[in-house]
Image (cartoon, rainbow, N blue to C red):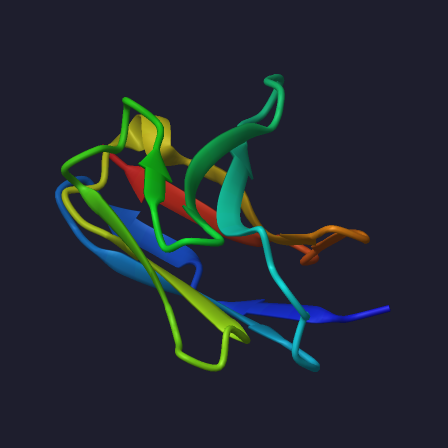
Length: 115
């Protein structure tokens, strides 16, 4: 079982920026998607951004233009640059790696945006 380690969460004022990183304990062969989800209190977990196997990126409408997702060439680290943060971006952010044999989740990192 691959382990995913997240870092970079914290408290920031509205309009500020944070960068989240997620690194796998080993290479995940043939990843079909590497991405970030978030869960706000009382809400379901939702996709924030993902990079698909061919490098195509996918963003939630609420973050498009403000967030940028990238990955390293070894396909072991995915990074989410979050700019112009809003209070509604508050939640626990989870990274997720998928391949044809299943998927793995990180433990989650808290992002809190104050107004």
